[in-house]
Amino acid sequence: MNAAADTFRRLGRPATRGRGEVLRILSESPIPLSPREILERIPEPRPDASTVYRSLSLMISLGLVRSVALHERSRRYEAVTEGTHRHRVVCRGCGRIESFQPKKCDLSRIENDIRGALGFDVSDHSLEFFGACAECGRKKGRGR
Ligand SMILES: [Zn+2]
Ligand SMILES: [Zn+2]
Image 1 (tube, rainbow, N blue to C red):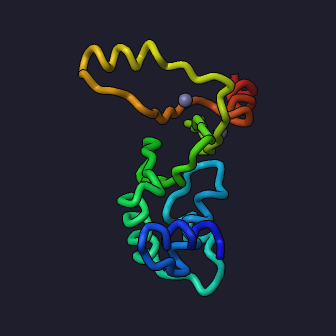
Image 2 (tube, rainbow, N blue to C red):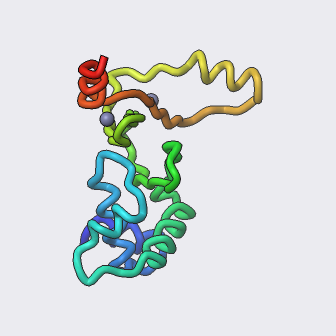
């Protein structure tokens, strides 16, 4: 029994092959994936896109997956995993997405501001950085 199937069983949901695959793919990916990318990574026979969307919304409601807005047309999804904390960098030029694990991630000042302004107790965050990747940066440099 794999970890994904185990998780579903614990939550009292049938671990269909599609659900198991979607969760496995998201858990193995260092960057959030779009539904199309998830579908492309499922081995044949592939479920249809609506199955993937239904699996995603179920897993979001179970707290296994979260959606990430990266200022694109399509939403991306990532597995909710304990212990790994990543930030994402998105290239404005080519759309490449990379992730990195910050050595230290101290946002206590911002979190205090949020608490002061909204009375909101922050427990987690998700950060995206936008700019030019190394390759696009080089291209731009040449053009000057
Ligand atoms: Zn780029
Ligand atoms: Zn962080």
